[in-house]
Image (cartoon, rainbow, N blue to C red; front, side, top):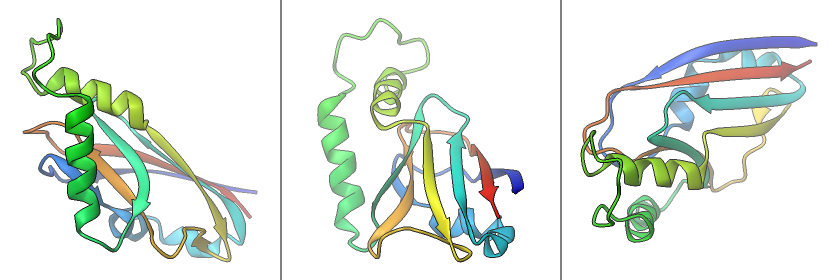
Length: 139
């Protein structure tokens, strides 16, 4: 049983939903050697999240951003405001979406559906780069 673990640094991205499947896969060429296994992706931040969603239509990221801004708007009377008006809504969104993904591996490839991609959900207006920990277990 093989274990592979890497940290991946993503560049700073604007607020919104960004497909990062290619960026993640380009950092883990060892994936091609795994016949059966799991890939776990964890984001080391509390104001961004990870999701799997539609990877083809560019309207989907825009609609996701609009929907989550409606669910957790900056205009609510938050108490935690010391890091700016976008910070507490970012924590709410990250808590709702989650900080990790587990994806099956088969034949050296991720078992994602035809229209699925890995998203970085950036919830801050001026975030720095984000750090991911990718762990693969398999044989």
